[in-house]
Length: 128
Image 1: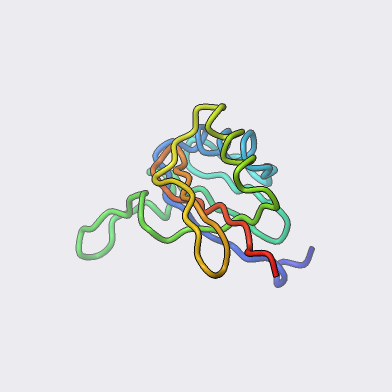
Image 2: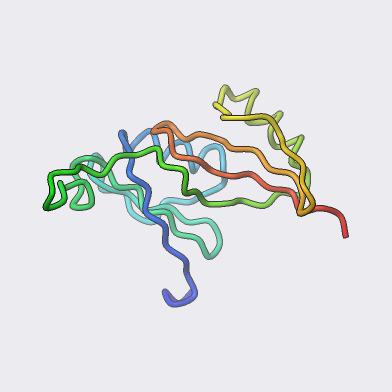
C-alpha cells in the first residue's frame, strides 16, 4: 500500500511493549516497526497506529513545559459485524471497557481502553 493511502494516528503510550501486545493480540494489528521502549508502529488495513512512549521524540515537553500524555478522548474506530460477540471475546480476555454498548441511529458502539488508557471505539453499523 502506498503511504499516501494510509491513515496514521499517533497515540501516546505509557508502555510500548504492552501496547504492541494489546493491539496485535486482541485487535488484529501487525507490527511494522518495534523500537521499544521508545516507539512502535502497528497496522491494520489502511490504518497505521504510531505508539509513542515517554522516551520517544513525541514525548518531549512542549515549549510551555506541558508533557504529552496518553488517555485523551480522541480515538480510532474499528468496525465489526457482530459487536456483541467481539465484546464478549475481549471481556473474556480480561480487557477493560469504559462503558457498555450504546445504540444510536448509526449503529452500536463501545469504548475499549488500551493499557495506557487510550480509547478504541468498537462499532457495528446499523442495519440498512
